[in-house]
Length: 246
Image (tube, rainbow, N blue to C red):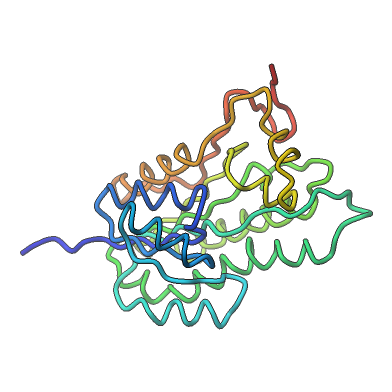
């Protein structure tokens, strides 16, 4: 009897950490479902690495429901990666729309997808849920109140998952990256390439593949081993706002 191929769902799979995760999990033998809003980008990544692209907007309950309805097999790995930051205004100048969008994607989006796929996670004999958080889930910094609030919420959700699912064959891991050079800063600064580049100037940031490799390692461990939280920073970063630049 041949062993069943395991299935992984990766949200935010159209770029950055999500796309890199698709690559490593496909290479590791998973059937990967790529989920994001940008269908053309998903199809391009699927042609290159494999997997099945499905359109998903985590900020829409209807989109999440339609996405989950297309998955009729056990889900062994769920990587809740969709999210990001918008703006860097001070607290007294914050953009309410930015905060609402960040909460919808980073917090409610994670909860929506997990709830929708819960029946499929339960069908796996040993599932793993990986929530991509941030060092901003523990620390704070000037101009980052909205984003840090969202990532603190991800921490609370991850810990609640561990409590509520204790005794079930489902592992929960939160991975908290420091500075990773992806489209993250370009999106945060509304396409301002100069401002985005300045975030990483003079130091050696992480790259998406570093986080993807950590995800691959976490899911490769024996089923009884749970990595509750994994913090990954570049050598040049000591805290969220303490960076060595040359």
